[in-house]
Each structure stands twice: as C-alpha cells, then as structure tokens.
Length: 304
Image 1 (cartoon, rainbow, N blue to C red):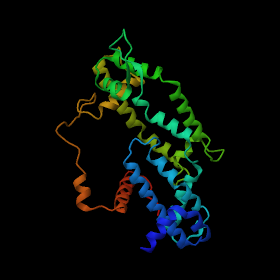
Image 2 (image 1 turned 60 degrees about the vertical axis):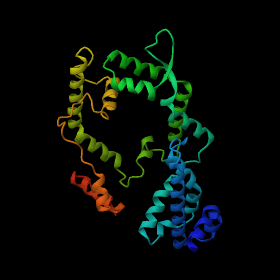
Image 3 (image 1 turned 90 degrees about the vertical axis):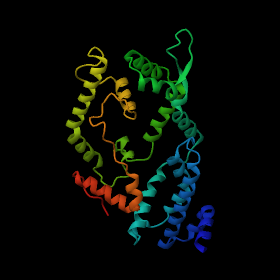
Image 4 (image 1 turned 120 degrees about the vertical axis):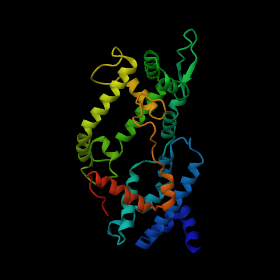
C-alpha cells in the first residue's frame, strides 16, 4: 500500500522526488512508476482508437517527463542488468520532442487521408461526386475486373492529393531527418536503432539477397496470374508489374476470391488461439519460441 501511494505521488511530483534520490533502488521505483503510467495511458488510448497522433506517439509523449528524470541516474553502473537494459532502451526516446500542435495537425491529416473526399466518381462523368479512398476507391480496386477502371482510380486519387496532405508528408520527412543523430548515419538508421547489432542494416541486406531468388519467383508467378486474367496486352511478359495491379493483388490476399488461387483449397490455416490459451504461455515463453524459430533459419541467437 505504501508503494502504490508513493507511486501515485510520483506520477505528479516525480521531478522533486527523484531529483534528490539517485540510488539504484530509487531507479527501480521510478521504473515501476513509469510502468504504471504506461499502462494507465495505454488503457486510456485503447478507448480512443482514432486518437489524432496514434498510440505509440501519445504514449511516448506522456512518458517524456519521467524519461527526463531517468537521465539523472548513473544507470550504466547499475548492478541489476535488467534495470540497466530498461534505462538504455527507454532513454532513446528522449531525442523525440514533445508533441506540438503542428505535429498533431499534420499527423491527423495523414491518418485520415483515406477518409477524405477529393476524387470524382468515374461512374458520373457529367457531375463530379467526390468519393473517399477507403469507402469507395479501395473496394473498386479490390473487386473490379476492368483494368482501365482500376488504373483510372489509382491515378486520379494520387493526382488530386490536396496540398495540405503533401505538406503534411513533407513535414514528416523533415521531422525525422532533423532528429538528432550522427551526421554520418543514413536517415533510415533511426528506424533500426532499437536493434543491438551495429551492423543490422548490412546483415539485413545480406538476408535480403538470400531470399531474392524466391522473391523473383513469386513476382513472376503473380505476373503470370495477372497475364492470364487481363491478357498480355495489359500485363507485360517480363519486368515490373504495374503498381495498380500489384495493389489489387495485395488487397485480394485478404478475401476468398484472389488473383492467386489457393493450391490446397480444402486446407485451412491452423487456429493458434487454443494452443496459446491452453498452455498459458508467459511473455518469456513466446520470446524463447520466436528466438528458436529464427535460429532454425540461421539467424543468430538472441542476446541475454
């Protein structure tokens, strides 16, 4: 009871509490308070799935004050390896600035772009009825057998993107380019910094090379299936697949009638829920299982 009272106080008065105590035991209390704050925020955000900036960004923003307090500790010399690891990972988020109104506005624009109406309905050539991508255009691309119709909507939606959407996208690109990182690092390094391996990108490229032959075979198989459906005058015999047809194939992968037929129509994917519920897997069990799966394919084992 005493801990929870202190923890609740810590949510509101953490700058004062942890400014004076920088021992490892105080660091552990701070971590427990941060964990409680995380769950409180996550529960609140789960009630608002259409929140303007997304759960991950909102969670990070709520935790920034506590993360700033973490920076005062001599965490590199902690005796507890788990606590040391938690500090190492969480402090990486300090480079992200707090959410500004500008960030919120541009994020909301990009999150709702599929619901905005700025493309004309092709079935009404004499009168422009504006339609949205999610509700109208995506179902057409998914289900239409008319290659001209698919191409028309794919092109028109992109050609009529409002300036506010283009500006929001440019804002996001600049935002991530300007985050503090080594001048020599490539901009995409920010997406991979959570991995321990300093050569992660180089290793990833090597893994991609090993699956490139299989990927080319799958690409050729899909192109041939599209040629059978739309004809050689629409789908080239070699080279790239037109993007609007690739988009259709992607959307159809979630429905029964797909451009790619199931070679075993009577076989269904296994239902993993009974397995997960029956054995009462714990988080570490799932981590060890996934680690074993990747090791079986030749990946290195997880670090301690």
